[in-house]
Image 1: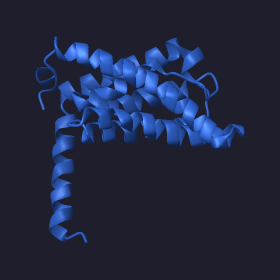
Image 2 (image 1 turned 90 degrees about the horizontal axis):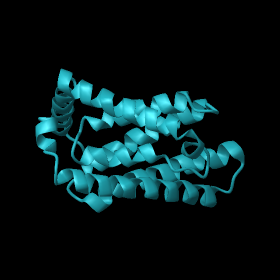
Image 3 (image 1 turned 135 degrees about the horizontal axis):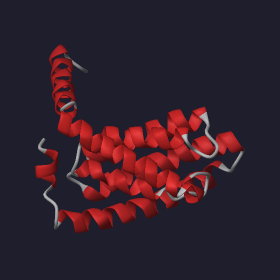
Length: 178
């Protein structure tokens, strides 16, 4: 079971992470990522929404492996993109955005195992967004989950390729300073 020391230790970890994420530098990085995510999603709106979708902006979901500041940026960017969706839905605004947050946290938590980290957005979006779309639009659940997961796989694959190229040219530790 959980002891008081475990809870205190977890609280200290969370406070430490929040302190690092609330610096001016970190907030600026998060804002840039949020803006890029939202802009790319809205620019490519015809393929960014619906049960058969490929949000190219989801390529950014691999960033938590190297930039923890991307976690709030991805959440806010997704929230903005969902608010300005061609067919906004409170369900997508809330659950779609929370799915991105869950996926980003999972990606960060598994950052030392890149394949598992990259699987987080695919699984989270496939299951949560796929289920949400199936229930909202009366679509077959398994098929819709699969369609969303396949679109996410394409975006994450693109993100992994770009991240691999960037890692050889960019010092993410210097950018992150965490």
